Image 1: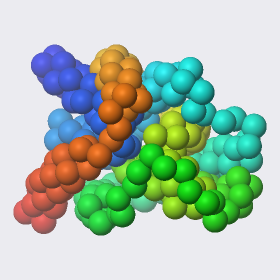
Image 2: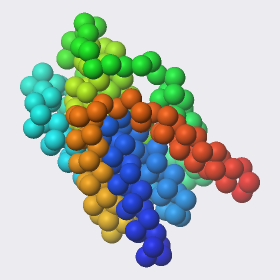
Image 3: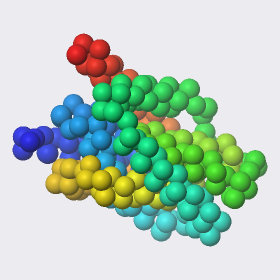
Image 4: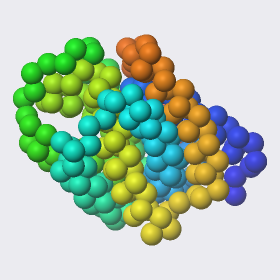
Length: 251
């Protein structure tokens, strides 16, 4: 049972994460450690993260959609395969023992943070695409599997791969990321809900914060871009990951 102040604190964290997620992805890098610090079991932390993420991503997607940056028809196959991949990932993660998951989670956080730190600089210039929309679909499905299995950093993986392989500029890639991110989050949320690994009240409280953050973040991305977000993500992620690893090995 969580103290009332924890609900308020995690809702505020969700607002910050929703803002960051709408701009550059990686909001889960903040949410997952915060939930674990609050004493939420790993599987419930993953499921509750999906619940709040769906709301925040939906608000961000609406803003990008209204700006004409989201293409639905060319990406229908990608959306379908991302859904399948995310369901598979969410099923697999629930087969892993809790103590093993307690170690895997911080290791994945480190990997995701390093990826963000080392990924190449991206611009808003469209470039020649290396794969077609259908050719990208299996790649999107693989990231969808990761999003269902774990999640933090998936938005950044989507965006980076869309820039590198589809040739989209950063803002357009970020907009399309919200479409596939909402798909994979919804698919994995369905699995976690059916298996009962959700803290509903906490997740809905955090959803309110995520929606506010998603709205502000998407508007900021459309106006200013997202270049300043990565250092903040890396710093927070590595600091919280260090604390998780310390807690794991000290116990």
